[in-house]
Image 1 (cartoon, helix red, strand yellow):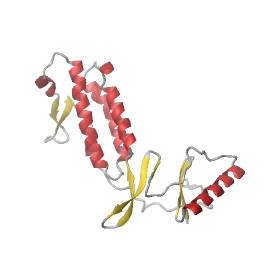
Image 2: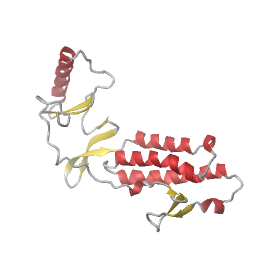
Image 3: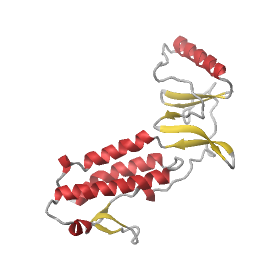
Length: 211
């Protein structure tokens, strides 16, 4: 049994069967695309893999993992490379070359990046732990950035930038007036629900909404 999942021109075909059957399905699909659309499957991007080994699609990692209570369960995870990419962006924004301006301006530069990343990955399994780690890293980078901006200030003076959050007064974070550090860990993490969506008939439908 095959089940295709498509987004724009990227797609995954889930095969419930043997590796030989998956290879046959890939060959049949390649032939169909070549004869009907003139398109070729990319050898570099097209691969056959077991779900227990996992694969990446649209920036997410999909894998089947063993759970002692339920057996094998499908997981949607944040790839480590994506976390490293965000750390790299934060480091670029708080590097020596950007050692200028106010804390508020720097937070306004960082917050949209952090918010967008958190909202994209908030449906992933284990997202809370990843978010907490990234919050700590961002806070540490902001501390280092301020040491560069204010080389003559001592640690106590710089630490005054850590104030009570307007959203959660019991938490201290980097804040300048009404602008405060966006905390990824405060993003609601939940599983994406497909109950409201009907599975398209891919034989007669493109799979697009309202198609």
